[in-house]
Amino acid sequence: MLLIERPPSGQGAHEQSGEAAGESVAFRDQPASPATIVALLGTVEPELLTAFAAAAAPNSLRALTSDFLAFEKWCRGRGVIALPAAAATVADYLRARDAAGAAPASLARYKASISRVHVLARLVDPTRDPLVTLTLRAVRRARGSAQKQARPLRFKGAVKDVRVDPPRGVSLAAMLDGCGTSVIGLRDTALLSVAYDTGLRANELVALAVEDLVAAIDADAGLIMVRRTKSDQEGEGATAYLSPRSMRALRLWCEEAGIEAGPLFRRVFVRRMPARAAVPGARWARVEGGELRVGRHPDTPAFAAHTRYTVGDEALTPAAVTGAYRRAMTRAFEAGALPGLEAPEFAAWVAGVSAHSTRVGLTQDLFSAGEDLAGIMDALRWKTPRMPLLYNRNLAAESGAAGRVVGRL
Image (cartoon, rainbow, N blue to C red; front, side):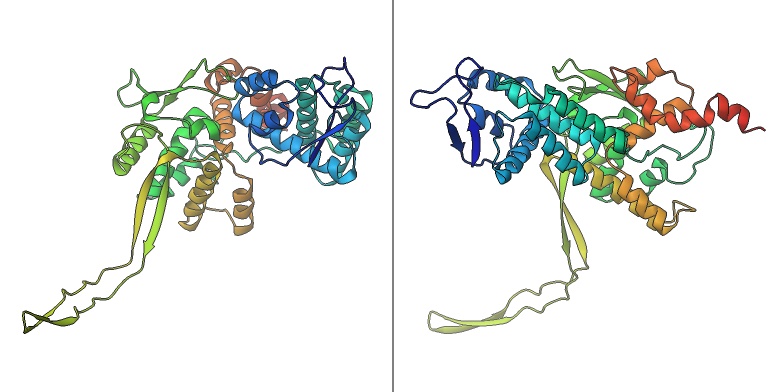
Protein backbone atom coordinates (compact mmCIF):
# COMPACT_ATOMS: atom_id res chain seq x y z
CA MET A 1 0.00 0.00 0.00
CA LEU A 2 1.29 3.47 -0.89
CA LEU A 3 0.66 6.19 1.68
CA ILE A 4 0.31 9.68 0.29
CA GLU A 5 -0.28 12.44 2.78
CA ARG A 6 -2.58 15.21 1.60
CA PRO A 7 -1.06 18.64 2.32
CA PRO A 8 -3.17 21.40 3.85
CA SER A 9 -5.14 23.68 1.53
CA GLY A 10 -3.02 26.18 -0.34
CA GLN A 11 0.08 23.96 -0.57
CA GLY A 12 -0.57 22.79 -4.07
CA ALA A 13 -2.81 19.73 -3.90
CA HIS A 14 -6.56 19.69 -4.48
CA GLU A 15 -8.38 18.55 -1.35
CA GLN A 16 -10.93 15.83 -1.89
CA SER A 17 -14.40 16.11 -0.42
CA GLY A 18 -14.83 14.10 2.77
CA GLU A 19 -11.06 13.98 3.45
CA ALA A 20 -9.49 16.00 6.22
CA ALA A 21 -6.22 17.78 5.60
CA GLY A 22 -3.31 15.52 6.47
CA GLU A 23 -5.32 12.32 6.12
CA SER A 24 -3.41 9.42 4.52
CA VAL A 25 -4.89 7.96 1.36
CA ALA A 26 -3.89 4.42 0.36
CA PHE A 27 -3.33 3.15 -3.16
CA ARG A 28 -2.71 -0.44 -4.11
CA ASP A 29 0.69 -1.41 -5.45
CA GLN A 30 0.78 -1.28 -9.23
CA PRO A 31 3.28 -2.76 -11.68
CA ALA A 32 6.21 -0.59 -12.74
CA SER A 33 5.11 1.00 -16.00
CA PRO A 34 4.92 4.51 -17.45
CA ALA A 35 1.31 4.76 -16.29
CA THR A 36 1.97 3.85 -12.66
CA ILE A 37 2.96 7.31 -11.45
CA VAL A 38 -0.02 8.82 -13.25
CA ALA A 39 -2.32 6.23 -11.65
CA LEU A 40 -0.88 6.78 -8.19
CA LEU A 41 -1.03 10.55 -8.34
CA GLY A 42 -3.99 11.00 -10.65
CA THR A 43 -6.25 12.23 -7.83
CA VAL A 44 -3.88 15.15 -7.26
CA GLU A 45 -3.98 16.70 -10.73
CA PRO A 46 -4.52 14.17 -13.53
CA GLU A 47 -4.29 16.68 -16.38
CA LEU A 48 -0.75 17.71 -15.47
CA LEU A 49 0.42 14.14 -14.98
CA THR A 50 -1.18 12.98 -18.23
CA ALA A 51 0.53 15.85 -20.07
CA PHE A 52 3.87 14.86 -18.55
CA ALA A 53 3.37 11.21 -19.54
CA ALA A 54 2.70 12.31 -23.13
CA ALA A 55 5.68 14.68 -23.25
CA ALA A 56 8.36 12.55 -21.59
CA ALA A 57 10.38 9.82 -23.28
CA PRO A 58 9.31 6.22 -22.51
CA ASN A 59 12.67 5.46 -20.89
CA SER A 60 12.38 8.55 -18.70
CA LEU A 61 8.91 7.47 -17.60
CA ARG A 62 10.10 3.97 -16.78
CA ALA A 63 13.04 5.32 -14.77
CA LEU A 64 10.80 7.77 -12.91
CA THR A 65 8.30 5.01 -12.11
CA SER A 66 10.93 2.53 -10.96
CA ASP A 67 12.83 5.10 -8.88
CA PHE A 68 9.78 6.45 -7.10
CA LEU A 69 8.30 3.03 -6.35
CA ALA A 70 11.64 1.95 -4.87
CA PHE A 71 11.65 5.07 -2.69
CA GLU A 72 8.03 4.49 -1.64
CA LYS A 73 8.76 0.87 -0.71
CA TRP A 74 11.73 1.97 1.41
CA CYS A 75 9.57 4.62 3.13
CA ARG A 76 6.76 2.13 3.75
CA GLY A 77 9.18 -0.26 5.43
CA ARG A 78 10.17 2.47 7.87
CA GLY A 79 6.73 3.90 8.44
CA VAL A 80 7.49 7.33 6.95
CA ILE A 81 5.57 9.33 4.37
CA ALA A 82 6.79 9.15 0.75
CA LEU A 83 4.70 12.01 -0.59
CA PRO A 84 5.30 14.67 0.49
CA ALA A 85 8.65 13.45 1.77
CA ALA A 86 10.69 15.26 4.37
CA ALA A 87 14.19 16.35 3.43
CA ALA A 88 15.60 14.13 6.20
CA THR A 89 13.76 11.14 4.70
CA VAL A 90 15.28 11.74 1.26
CA ALA A 91 18.75 12.22 2.74
CA ASP A 92 18.43 8.98 4.74
CA TYR A 93 17.29 7.16 1.61
CA LEU A 94 20.27 8.37 -0.42
CA ARG A 95 22.65 7.33 2.35
CA ALA A 96 20.98 3.89 2.50
CA ARG A 97 21.30 3.40 -1.26
CA ASP A 98 24.91 4.55 -1.10
CA ALA A 99 25.61 1.98 1.60
CA ALA A 100 24.00 -0.66 -0.61
CA GLY A 101 26.48 0.15 -3.39
CA ALA A 102 24.53 2.49 -5.68
CA ALA A 103 26.79 4.65 -7.85
CA PRO A 104 26.81 8.42 -7.35
CA ALA A 105 25.23 8.87 -10.78
CA SER A 106 22.40 6.55 -9.75
CA LEU A 107 21.89 8.48 -6.52
CA ALA A 108 21.60 11.68 -8.54
CA ARG A 109 18.93 10.04 -10.68
CA TYR A 110 16.97 8.88 -7.62
CA LYS A 111 17.09 12.42 -6.24
CA ALA A 112 15.89 13.83 -9.58
CA SER A 113 13.01 11.34 -9.75
CA ILE A 114 11.83 12.14 -6.23
CA SER A 115 12.05 15.83 -7.11
CA ARG A 116 10.05 15.39 -10.33
CA VAL A 117 7.21 13.55 -8.59
CA HIS A 118 6.91 16.30 -5.97
CA VAL A 119 6.93 19.01 -8.63
CA LEU A 120 4.27 17.22 -10.66
CA ALA A 121 2.16 16.86 -7.54
CA ARG A 122 2.67 20.60 -6.88
CA LEU A 123 4.29 19.89 -3.53
CA VAL A 124 7.33 21.44 -1.92
CA ASP A 125 10.43 19.78 -3.40
CA PRO A 126 12.43 18.25 -0.49
CA THR A 127 15.48 17.62 -2.68
CA ARG A 128 16.20 21.37 -2.82
CA ASP A 129 16.85 21.37 0.91
CA PRO A 130 20.55 21.83 1.80
CA LEU A 131 20.45 18.59 3.79
CA VAL A 132 19.76 16.60 0.61
CA THR A 133 22.17 18.46 -1.67
CA LEU A 134 24.98 18.28 0.92
CA THR A 135 24.34 14.57 1.48
CA LEU A 136 24.76 13.86 -2.22
CA ARG A 137 27.83 16.09 -2.39
CA ALA A 138 29.36 14.21 0.54
CA VAL A 139 28.85 10.88 -1.24
CA ARG A 140 30.51 12.20 -4.38
CA ARG A 141 33.42 13.54 -2.37
CA ALA A 142 33.89 10.24 -0.55
CA ARG A 143 33.50 7.94 -3.55
CA GLY A 144 34.24 10.12 -6.55
CA SER A 145 31.73 10.87 -9.30
CA ALA A 146 33.37 9.10 -12.24
CA GLN A 147 30.90 6.95 -14.15
CA LYS A 148 31.68 3.42 -15.23
CA GLN A 149 32.28 3.41 -18.97
CA ALA A 150 31.49 0.57 -21.35
CA ARG A 151 34.54 -1.05 -22.91
CA PRO A 152 35.14 0.46 -26.35
CA LEU A 153 34.59 -1.69 -29.43
CA ARG A 154 36.90 -0.04 -31.93
CA PHE A 155 36.97 -1.28 -35.51
CA LYS A 156 40.60 -2.42 -35.40
CA GLY A 157 41.03 -2.53 -31.66
CA ALA A 158 43.50 -0.46 -29.63
CA VAL A 159 45.39 1.18 -32.51
CA LYS A 160 46.75 4.72 -32.89
CA ASP A 161 45.31 5.31 -36.36
CA VAL A 162 42.33 3.24 -37.45
CA ARG A 163 42.96 4.13 -41.10
CA VAL A 164 46.42 2.58 -41.46
CA ASP A 165 47.28 0.41 -38.44
CA PRO A 166 46.65 -3.37 -38.51
CA PRO A 167 44.05 -4.83 -36.12
CA ARG A 168 45.16 -5.38 -32.55
CA GLY A 169 43.46 -7.14 -29.63
CA VAL A 170 39.67 -7.07 -29.39
CA SER A 171 38.33 -5.55 -32.60
CA LEU A 172 34.94 -5.14 -34.20
CA ALA A 173 36.41 -6.45 -37.46
CA ALA A 174 37.22 -9.81 -35.84
CA MET A 175 33.78 -9.98 -34.28
CA LEU A 176 32.10 -9.32 -37.63
CA ASP A 177 34.16 -12.05 -39.29
CA GLY A 178 33.20 -14.52 -36.56
CA CYS A 179 29.43 -14.03 -36.62
CA GLY A 180 28.93 -16.76 -39.23
CA THR A 181 26.24 -17.27 -41.86
CA SER A 182 23.36 -18.64 -39.82
CA VAL A 183 20.21 -16.55 -39.60
CA ILE A 184 21.27 -15.21 -36.19
CA GLY A 185 24.81 -14.69 -37.45
CA LEU A 186 23.62 -12.61 -40.39
CA ARG A 187 21.43 -10.51 -38.12
CA ASP A 188 24.21 -9.97 -35.58
CA THR A 189 26.63 -8.97 -38.36
CA ALA A 190 24.20 -6.36 -39.65
CA LEU A 191 23.43 -5.16 -36.13
CA LEU A 192 27.07 -4.75 -35.12
CA SER A 193 28.03 -3.05 -38.37
CA VAL A 194 25.14 -0.57 -38.30
CA ALA A 195 25.70 0.11 -34.60
CA TYR A 196 29.34 1.02 -35.24
CA ASP A 197 28.65 3.16 -38.31
CA THR A 198 25.90 5.16 -36.65
CA GLY A 199 26.94 5.18 -32.99
CA LEU A 200 23.31 4.65 -32.05
CA ARG A 201 22.23 3.61 -28.57
CA ALA A 202 20.42 0.29 -28.08
CA ASN A 203 16.88 1.68 -28.02
CA GLU A 204 17.64 3.78 -31.11
CA LEU A 205 19.05 0.77 -32.98
CA VAL A 206 16.06 -1.47 -32.40
CA ALA A 207 13.72 1.34 -33.49
CA LEU A 208 15.18 1.38 -37.03
CA ALA A 209 12.89 0.20 -39.82
CA VAL A 210 13.29 -0.71 -43.48
CA GLU A 211 11.39 2.45 -44.34
CA ASP A 212 14.16 4.53 -42.71
CA LEU A 213 16.78 3.48 -45.30
CA VAL A 214 17.68 6.21 -47.80
CA ALA A 215 19.86 6.02 -50.93
CA ALA A 216 23.21 7.79 -50.79
CA ILE A 217 25.22 9.46 -53.55
CA ASP A 218 27.65 6.55 -53.29
CA ALA A 219 25.62 3.67 -54.73
CA ASP A 220 27.37 1.14 -52.48
CA ALA A 221 26.78 3.10 -49.27
CA GLY A 222 23.53 4.27 -47.73
CA LEU A 223 21.87 6.59 -45.27
CA ILE A 224 19.34 5.91 -42.56
CA MET A 225 16.87 8.20 -40.88
CA VAL A 226 17.07 8.25 -37.08
CA ARG A 227 13.58 9.27 -36.01
CA ARG A 228 14.29 9.97 -32.38
CA THR A 229 17.31 9.94 -30.08
CA LYS A 230 18.06 10.55 -26.42
CA SER A 231 18.89 14.18 -27.21
CA ASP A 232 15.98 14.61 -29.63
CA GLN A 233 12.84 13.72 -27.72
CA GLU A 234 10.61 15.85 -29.93
CA GLY A 235 11.42 13.78 -33.01
CA GLU A 236 13.16 16.37 -35.16
CA GLY A 237 15.15 13.49 -36.62
CA ALA A 238 18.67 13.04 -37.97
CA THR A 239 20.45 11.16 -40.76
CA ALA A 240 23.29 8.69 -40.20
CA TYR A 241 25.76 7.24 -42.72
CA LEU A 242 25.93 3.52 -43.52
CA SER A 243 29.13 2.14 -45.04
CA PRO A 244 29.12 -0.29 -47.98
CA ARG A 245 30.01 -2.95 -45.39
CA SER A 246 26.81 -2.28 -43.48
CA MET A 247 24.67 -2.12 -46.60
CA ARG A 248 25.94 -5.55 -47.71
CA ALA A 249 25.25 -6.99 -44.27
CA LEU A 250 21.73 -5.54 -44.24
CA ARG A 251 20.94 -6.96 -47.69
CA LEU A 252 22.08 -10.45 -46.70
CA TRP A 253 20.12 -10.36 -43.45
CA CYS A 254 16.91 -8.98 -44.97
CA GLU A 255 17.01 -11.43 -47.89
CA GLU A 256 17.53 -14.41 -45.58
CA ALA A 257 14.86 -13.24 -43.13
CA GLY A 258 12.39 -12.17 -45.82
CA ILE A 259 12.14 -8.65 -44.39
CA GLU A 260 10.66 -6.11 -46.79
CA ALA A 261 9.07 -3.66 -44.36
CA GLY A 262 8.91 -2.93 -40.65
CA PRO A 263 11.63 -3.39 -38.01
CA LEU A 264 15.13 -4.02 -39.34
CA PHE A 265 16.44 -6.01 -36.40
CA ARG A 266 14.08 -8.71 -35.16
CA ARG A 267 13.92 -11.59 -32.76
CA VAL A 268 14.89 -14.98 -34.14
CA PHE A 269 13.36 -18.08 -32.58
CA VAL A 270 15.60 -21.14 -32.60
CA ARG A 271 14.53 -24.77 -32.47
CA ARG A 272 17.23 -27.42 -32.43
CA MET A 273 16.07 -30.70 -33.93
CA PRO A 274 17.96 -33.86 -32.87
CA ALA A 275 18.96 -36.50 -35.38
CA ARG A 276 16.40 -39.25 -35.98
CA ALA A 277 16.86 -42.71 -37.47
CA ALA A 278 14.58 -44.05 -40.16
CA VAL A 279 11.44 -45.73 -38.86
CA PRO A 280 9.84 -48.49 -40.95
CA GLY A 281 6.16 -48.01 -41.57
CA ALA A 282 3.90 -50.13 -39.38
CA ARG A 283 1.65 -52.77 -40.93
CA TRP A 284 -2.09 -52.33 -40.66
CA ALA A 285 -5.13 -54.52 -41.16
CA ARG A 286 -8.83 -53.77 -41.16
CA VAL A 287 -12.09 -55.32 -42.34
CA GLU A 288 -13.95 -53.49 -45.07
CA GLY A 289 -17.17 -54.84 -46.60
CA GLY A 290 -16.63 -58.19 -45.00
CA GLU A 291 -13.12 -58.48 -46.47
CA LEU A 292 -9.79 -58.30 -44.64
CA ARG A 293 -7.49 -55.64 -46.03
CA VAL A 294 -3.84 -55.31 -45.04
CA GLY A 295 -1.20 -52.75 -45.83
CA ARG A 296 1.74 -50.83 -44.54
CA HIS A 297 2.17 -47.18 -43.56
CA PRO A 298 4.95 -45.24 -45.35
CA ASP A 299 8.41 -45.37 -43.86
CA THR A 300 9.55 -42.31 -41.88
CA PRO A 301 12.86 -41.23 -43.37
CA ALA A 302 15.92 -40.47 -41.26
CA PHE A 303 17.19 -36.95 -40.95
CA ALA A 304 20.30 -35.39 -39.49
CA ALA A 305 20.35 -33.01 -36.55
CA HIS A 306 19.53 -29.50 -37.68
CA THR A 307 18.40 -26.10 -36.45
CA ARG A 308 15.23 -24.32 -37.46
CA TYR A 309 15.12 -20.53 -37.39
CA THR A 310 11.93 -18.50 -37.36
CA VAL A 311 12.19 -14.74 -37.74
CA GLY A 312 9.57 -12.87 -35.73
CA ASP A 313 7.64 -9.76 -36.69
CA GLU A 314 8.60 -7.70 -33.65
CA ALA A 315 11.80 -5.73 -33.16
CA LEU A 316 14.58 -6.86 -30.85
CA THR A 317 14.41 -5.48 -27.34
CA PRO A 318 17.18 -3.03 -26.33
CA ALA A 319 18.43 -5.56 -23.76
CA ALA A 320 19.04 -8.11 -26.54
CA VAL A 321 21.63 -5.87 -28.21
CA THR A 322 24.23 -6.44 -25.49
CA GLY A 323 23.64 -10.19 -25.82
CA ALA A 324 24.40 -10.00 -29.54
CA TYR A 325 27.67 -8.18 -28.85
CA ARG A 326 28.77 -10.73 -26.28
CA ARG A 327 27.79 -13.62 -28.53
CA ALA A 328 29.87 -12.20 -31.39
CA MET A 329 32.86 -11.65 -29.09
CA THR A 330 32.63 -15.21 -27.79
CA ARG A 331 32.58 -16.64 -31.32
CA ALA A 332 35.63 -14.59 -32.28
CA PHE A 333 37.52 -15.72 -29.18
CA GLU A 334 36.65 -19.39 -29.70
CA ALA A 335 37.77 -19.13 -33.34
CA GLY A 336 41.16 -17.76 -32.28
CA ALA A 337 40.45 -14.41 -33.95
CA LEU A 338 41.50 -12.42 -30.87
CA PRO A 339 45.20 -13.32 -30.59
CA GLY A 340 46.96 -12.61 -27.32
CA LEU A 341 43.74 -12.48 -25.34
CA GLU A 342 43.85 -14.89 -22.41
CA ALA A 343 40.74 -16.34 -20.77
CA PRO A 344 40.70 -14.00 -17.69
CA GLU A 345 41.02 -10.89 -19.86
CA PHE A 346 38.38 -12.22 -22.23
CA ALA A 347 36.00 -12.72 -19.31
CA ALA A 348 36.59 -9.11 -18.25
CA TRP A 349 35.85 -7.94 -21.79
CA VAL A 350 32.61 -9.89 -21.97
CA ALA A 351 31.51 -8.46 -18.62
CA GLY A 352 32.47 -4.91 -19.63
CA VAL A 353 31.01 -4.77 -23.13
CA SER A 354 27.53 -3.38 -23.66
CA ALA A 355 25.33 -1.93 -26.37
CA HIS A 356 27.09 1.39 -25.73
CA SER A 357 30.51 -0.08 -26.62
CA THR A 358 30.22 0.66 -30.35
CA ARG A 359 29.33 4.30 -29.60
CA VAL A 360 32.41 4.64 -27.39
CA GLY A 361 34.58 2.81 -29.94
CA LEU A 362 33.44 4.91 -32.90
CA THR A 363 34.12 8.09 -30.92
CA GLN A 364 37.67 6.97 -30.17
CA ASP A 365 38.28 5.91 -33.77
CA LEU A 366 37.11 9.28 -35.06
CA PHE A 367 39.42 11.12 -32.67
CA SER A 368 42.35 8.83 -33.55
CA ALA A 369 41.74 9.50 -37.25
CA GLY A 370 42.14 13.23 -36.62
CA GLU A 371 38.50 14.33 -36.82
CA ASP A 372 37.68 17.48 -34.88
CA LEU A 373 35.33 17.67 -31.91
CA ALA A 374 32.62 19.61 -33.77
CA GLY A 375 32.48 16.99 -36.53
CA ILE A 376 32.34 14.13 -34.02
CA MET A 377 29.55 15.80 -32.07
CA ASP A 378 27.58 16.26 -35.27
CA ALA A 379 28.15 12.67 -36.43
CA LEU A 380 27.01 11.17 -33.12
CA ARG A 381 24.32 13.81 -32.46
CA TRP A 382 25.73 15.24 -29.23
CA LYS A 383 24.52 18.59 -27.96
CA THR A 384 27.47 19.19 -25.60
CA PRO A 385 31.15 18.11 -25.73
CA ARG A 386 31.17 16.46 -22.30
CA MET A 387 30.62 12.83 -23.33
CA PRO A 388 32.86 12.66 -26.44
CA LEU A 389 35.69 14.23 -24.45
CA LEU A 390 35.07 11.75 -21.63
CA TYR A 391 35.19 8.81 -24.05
CA ASN A 392 38.46 10.11 -25.51
CA ARG A 393 40.31 11.06 -22.34
CA ASN A 394 42.64 8.03 -22.35
CA LEU A 395 43.60 8.50 -26.00
CA ALA A 396 43.97 12.24 -25.43
CA ALA A 397 46.41 11.62 -22.58
CA GLU A 398 48.56 9.39 -24.78
CA SER A 399 48.52 11.62 -27.85
CA GLY A 400 48.55 14.97 -26.02
CA ALA A 401 51.47 17.29 -25.32
CA ALA A 402 52.88 15.21 -22.45
CA GLY A 403 52.54 11.97 -24.39
CA ARG A 404 54.29 13.40 -27.45
CA VAL A 405 57.25 14.81 -25.49
CA VAL A 406 57.70 12.66 -22.40
CA GLY A 407 57.46 9.45 -24.42
CA ARG A 408 60.61 10.40 -26.31
CA LEU A 409 62.73 11.20 -23.27
